Length: 86
Image (cartoon, rainbow, N blue to C red):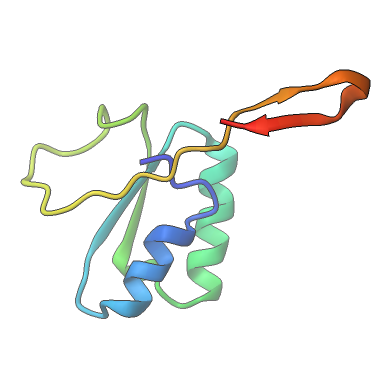
């Protein structure tokens, strides 16, 4: 959920060679980056990338474990600089 560049799913796939993963993101652009990364690191056959808003696009199969990498939300401070991550 919130796969972004795919780094979490890719890391799990590389550490657990028998794992089959489904990685979700609402952004087609993020999924394109994740696809490129998974292919480059030779784990794309075991990672299904799905465009989805949270769990809406998941099949009804049993989920064994899920990982979530939510983005850091920042406020812009004065002078256009980024503020504290929340």
